[in-house]
Image 1 (cartoon, rainbow, N blue to C red):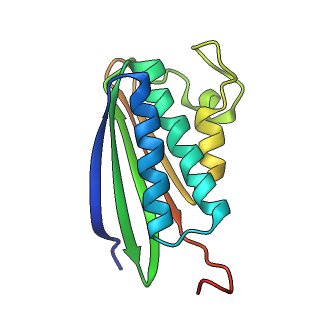
Image 2 (cartoon, rainbow, N blue to C red; image 1 turned 135 degrees about the vertical axis):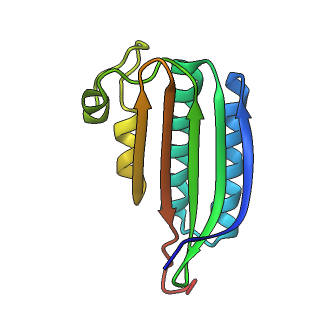
Length: 143
């Protein structure tokens, strides 16, 4: 079975304000798909962290947001791309607590814990692509 892309929207990350726009767009998409409050907060936080990484570490890039379906399930998939310096020690970055930007170093590792699917590819000197997905979870009252 293949994942179907039902709708998509690409947003450029060119300034710090664009992080907020990505966050808002993901929140709206999750709510429209019927995500519960926890799943909405999780995917929105992951989007914010990953968009901030694109801005902070690469000076900009893009976020492709997709509404996806698979076997009756609905979800949000997000692709964050940049052409920045890349991640020299991906294992260390994913472990958390390591930062090259004087932060807590929890953007990648924290985002990984908030989503259902997580993939990162990074080449030093060429950039990074992070693809994550979150599937809707429904309470017994929302079906």
